[in-house]
Every structure is written in structure tokens, then in C-alpha cells.
Image 1 (cartoon, rainbow, N blue to C red):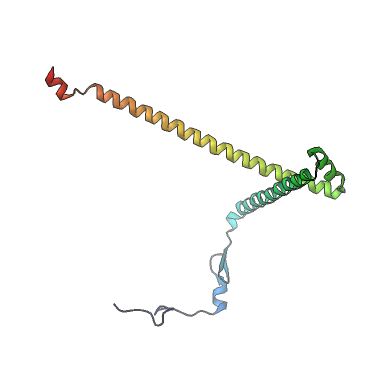
Image 2 (image 1 turned 120 degrees about the vertical axis):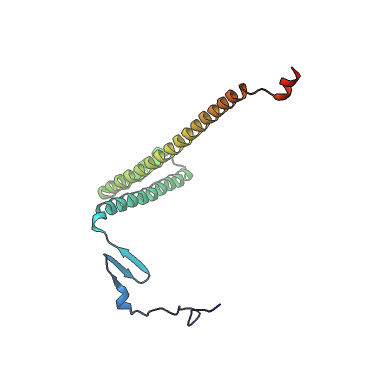
Length: 159
């Protein structure tokens, strides 16, 4: 078998390109190092919406985790839930209260999205089980209907 490589790392028909030749690629794509960034103006709105949703989910998850962690720590210090919330809220200035409400909205939105996802998952599992049960029931009924018309040859010969 003949090897087509001039060296162990490069094929025989390679072309060396300078860094300048690899920086810009036709078709709205830019390559920076080993990363290829493609820009499609027709998909800009969808990209912005996806970024916003993903960013809100990320911030909501972080806010929810931080809030629960803070409440757990305050509970371990002997404060009740209402005392913890009151202590935190009273220690905020106006900007802090606005930020708390905004971050709380993100955390609530993230919690609602997780609840909806769990509900949809449980619902789809239930529907799949219901369909599988109905299909099994139909298969049994069809099998029994086929078996009703068949006579066992040994039983028929004995009769």
C-alpha cells in the first residue's frame, strides 16, 4: 500500500495559506483563530430572541439558587422566613430594591419555566403510557378474535 503523505502530518496535496487569507471567508462568515463566526442578517431577530431567553434563564437560575442559598443560611442562623425577607429588604436602598424585584422576576420566570417543563414531561409520559396501554389492549383483542376462529387439530380429531 502506498502512502500519499509527504510527512506524517500533512497530505501530499495541501496548500499553505497565510493568516491573512484565513481571516475572512466569503458568505458572511469570519474566522478568528479556530472559531468560525457566521452572520446571517435574515436570522438576526431569532438570534436576539434566543440570546435574550437563554440569558434570562441563566440569570434566573443564578438568582433562584442564590436566594434559596441565602434563605437557608439565614434559617441556620435562627431566622424565620419572614424575618429573613424583612432583614434583607430593610437593608436595601431604592436601587437595591429595584434590582431585587428585577432579579426576583427573573428567578420567578425561571421557576415557572422549569415547572412548565416538568408538567409537559409528565404529561407526555402519561400520554405515551396511555397510548401503549390502548395499543396493547387492541393487540390482545385482535389476538383473541383470531384465536376464536381457530380450532385445535388435536381437539377436533378427538371429537
